[in-house]
Image 1 (tube, each protein chain N blue to C red):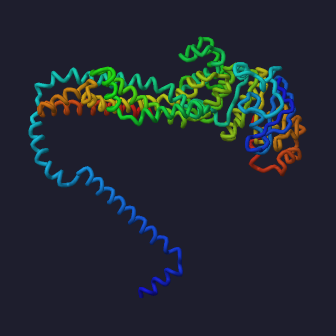
Image 2 (image 1 turned 120 degrees about the vertical axis):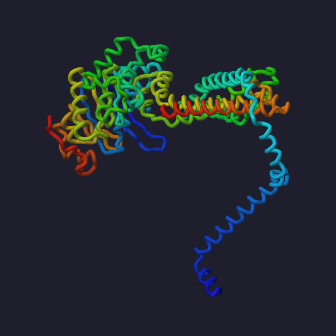
Image 3 (image 1 turned 180 degrees about the vertical axis):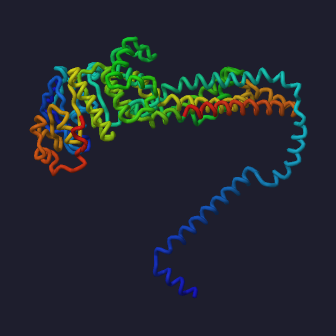
Length: 258
Length: 270
């Protein structure tokens, strides 16, 4: 469970990232956060594992305060939260397996990880994670040999190898083509359902949001302006979130393939 | 005709700009030539000197030829020592450079109270030429290869740390963010996020510095810091130019070989 209590964020230049956000996200939910660019989607997501600090309020993950955590407590909390980025953020020169294994570092001493001494179970776990996203055969290939969609799946596997209970995905499909977008979203959805991993995804495609989410949160200028089921999120509602009618490029437009 | 031209240009102020530019360029050239002449007078560097020296150069070359091949077995040892000095100096300097490069890079050490003093130390080290280091260490530790090795430690440290920290600052920040997000501590972040990206650059700079060091080590002997330079100094002092030429030839061959080898490896790395 993730709770936001009166969370605000003001950037040093004075712009408000988040304004008095109160949210409770329950285990196993697949929450999609929507809003126009600059509405605070990334700020909200990144404040959960404190890649961004907040200015006021408190965020708790499973009852533990992220806001007040010491650096070692924070590392422990982060270990249980997988993160997926728009640009994949893999080490391109390293192999796929090493990238996935890097998700395990939080479980071991610095000394062991320095020399890459991961136990056999970790390698098994990582290979299994790659299997879940259907790219096990790529394990020993350098990451930059993979396509964008495959790289994003590696980063999902990294989150799985972490044995994360929460996955945060910040615009995971923004740099992918429509077909791979669907594959990556399907992977995220399947993992969410099969392993009951709480998943929070920032998206700007509203048809994808409706299709995959169990809950949609709309942000406008750092404020939560909508919080409801996909069925409740009508075009009218989206127009209100965006403050204008929906544009064509906010629809992926390959709906209903699966 | 002339007056009408100047009148039109007076009406268009913008056409004056190229004229001013031309004066500026002329002034720059005049200043440059003046400085050159002034330097030449102060240091007595004149074409005349070159002309007078030319026959001397010819006779020197004549004395260098043929090289004294029988001297070759004697200089193998010192040549090897020169390479060993370069290997030791580069390795120790390179290893010392790693932590300092990490502390200098703003993206890894956001605390300016640490990174800026570190950079200042680096700049200081790099302003001192290797021969000066060698001369100082010879005075401290006595004549011999140890002083030369130590000089190259400092020299390599300065170059490698500087180039490496600049390479570290240019790496993709994405993997660092990802490592932070999985709960890695600082050292784990460096091992998994920084090292795979920066290592090829580090190794390349290391090899480059090694090339430079082999050349530098060949002249360290001139100030008594070991290596082949000592023999070169002696040969020149005894006017044995045939021996000097074999030393120069051997050094040339070794340096070329090492340059070639390291260039091949570096090309494969990057």
